[in-house]
Amino acid sequence: FQIAGKQILELPLLCEDATTGDVTARENCDRALHAIDAINDKRDGFLDAVLPNVEIVARVFSLPCSQGKGAETFQKAVAAHPNAAAVIGPSCSSDVAEAGSVASRENAGRQVIISPESTASSLGDEAAFPHVVRLPSPETIATAAMETLFEHYSVLAGGWRNVALLYDDSLWARESAENFADALGGMVDVLGGGACVGGGCDEWARDGTTRDPLGVSFSLARWDGLRGQDRENAAAELVETMYKTHANVVYLAVEPRVQGDIFAAVYRNKRDRSDYAWLLATSVVADSLDAADGIQGALGFTEAVVAYADAAPGSTTRTFLDLWAAASSAEACGVSRDEALARGGGGGDD
Picture 1 (cartoon, rainbow, N blue to C red):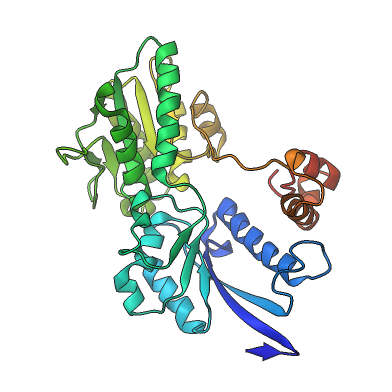
Picture 2: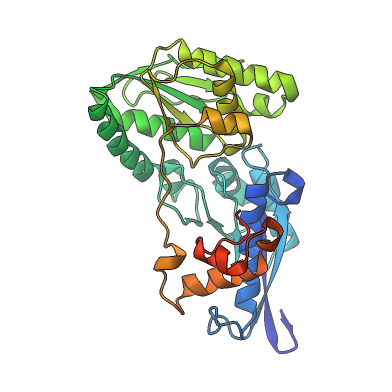
């Protein structure tokens, strides 16, 4: 529809907002909203020629990661905005699978789902998940890079042979662990035997040939129901189960909200960490001092993006980072705008 000569473009966002308590996820949502504001402003130098007579009106629908609410939230957003051509989000693979499935589409529309972070390889099946567009590389690409990392450090260590997989039962974590095991093929022995610590696992990573369960898994739904000492105990049990495999390497694929608790348990365990290594399927998340100590020495990687210093002046990337730094909370962190830009443009990340 139109207002004052402008066409209104409705754009639902399915993301974690302030109601979820996840600060990192909330900032991802804020960045998306800020980009929309910048596109709407035709005087700031950021994509001013894009949609010149359109006003994008965004509305956030809160969707906590991998808690079984993907289809429900997507259908709610589409029902509220039936004229929307696309929906931004979800970010998590399990939620994308729920929202973008053929069954979900029967109760919603043909809106394109634009997922900024989901990487599960199965989501590339266009027949099963029609009208789904993802921005990052799929998990097969990420695990191929992790295989190279593994081989490099294995040579330095004199040969790693025993690998444990520790993962939650979300779609992304299972596929990440499974792809890593497949990439290594017959090079290693994958330990753990499909153990489900604490019970309640819905699915497992499986051997590509025998389809036997692999590694050590746990129920994410059960984990989310734990609090305080019960969660600490659950993390300690996972770590102890991993130790009992006697692995040289632990490949960890868990949701970020779990990773900090795992490494806090590693720190509290006080066991000698010189005999094994951690490989992380996600970027490092250390949300406490104990976790920061426990995660020391872990190896991982993130997909490369253009750094602020490498972006050409006047480029789309640099213009957006300038606008983001000016609008984010650098001052609240005691960092000046110039200092924030020099560090990479993410003024609110400190």
